[in-house]
Length: 572
Image 1 (spheres, rainbow, N blue to C red):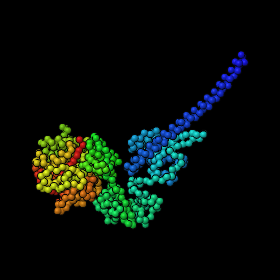
Image 2: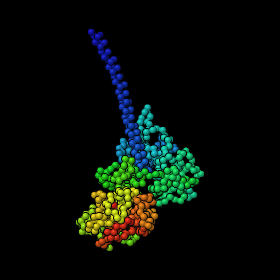
Image 3: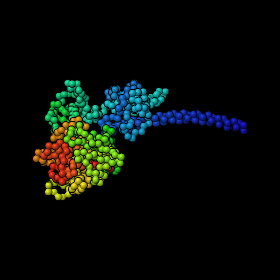
Image 4: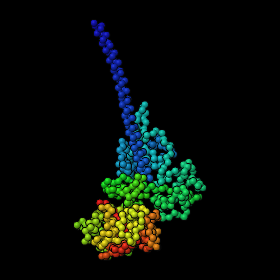
């Protein structure tokens, strides 16, 4: 029995030793696997950040033509020593901290020093918990890196690859200039003055050759054009169009040209890009950070050329199945300083005109001050309520809308002096003008006239006020290349000597900041009064010599072919 007991104890001891050994092995394996699991998670967090940033930066770049990064970063010696940078693509002096605030939907695992670096730009290089990007290669790196210890050695990961990425990307933009589809940036050429210009070719491997007929050099065009330069050849057989060329040059501020053939390459502007319909009044911010407000029921343009406030932001209230606008279109007029929202004195240069301030009396009401007989009829309740709402809206939202086109008619037949029919007002391209219309029945009864028609379109639409017209002129005048229009707008409007009219938006050269025919075609009724029986017409007209800033006083019952009107819209 004792021997048996001893035997049992011996077996138990061996089993215990074996169990302990197995447990130690399993524990070591679990610890190793736990460490490995942590390493995997840490790297996955880095890779996730890099991929998210890569996608967001790409979206931003494609939309705005630049990467979201402004703070230069030079503390990259450790990246160079790690042999992770491309010798050909990652240019050493072109690293910048990624601007995380410029992109929406960014939640990262690392990069917590961004706010510190932004607040301390002069010392940004001392921070390392940052993501940086190379502006030439668009490669993204985590400056601090993630250290993973393996086999007694530590491997530091700075991005989601461990060997230099030598792949050359085809940059869509160079110095903010869009490279046309089917062409590649191949370098920069210098003129005799040492100025550099971008050169493109349809063969990415070509070297710059001044004798090549397949290479095109960027020609900068600062001032707006209204016709094709004499040194340019437009090849219509290749699908090029004069109006499209002018529109492209004025938007992109230049074009690509071959010096041997004088042929050009330019980027067509796609107009059929619109947002979803705004179900409520909403704020829109363009790529320059400028803000406009979109009224309920409208869509804002997302297309190049019509999606920036400084060049004329366009909205529409209807599109077809192909995305083309079939609705009424308006252009946003910014009024950033309400106390500049004033009427100007008659017959003076706008630069020296006396300004009539929009006062804000203690009762909270706004009035256009009386001067030279030009008043708002303060006894007529409809106009008073309307002007109060309009002024308050402009002050709150810092702007208003003006019809992109002169008001037209739905009917495909021009109105005549004998027209007694009621036409349907529309603000669309290529329509007959709503002319032969009086201002109103009387100064206090606007029926059967332009005032009534303008108000009938929307609950927040009006006939353009004098103060609004002056705001349009002031906004246009901010563009130095357009200042000449105050003296002579004959090249920007239809001034046919016989008085023949054109349809709305017929010619691209009559487009000023996406507003058509404001300088001529028909003179336009406004709400501005002159005396007790006259209203003021603004802008030039066919058969006349008036320019964009002219004022003509006319009896409210005058009805002629060269007079129409333009509708304004405010946020309500």
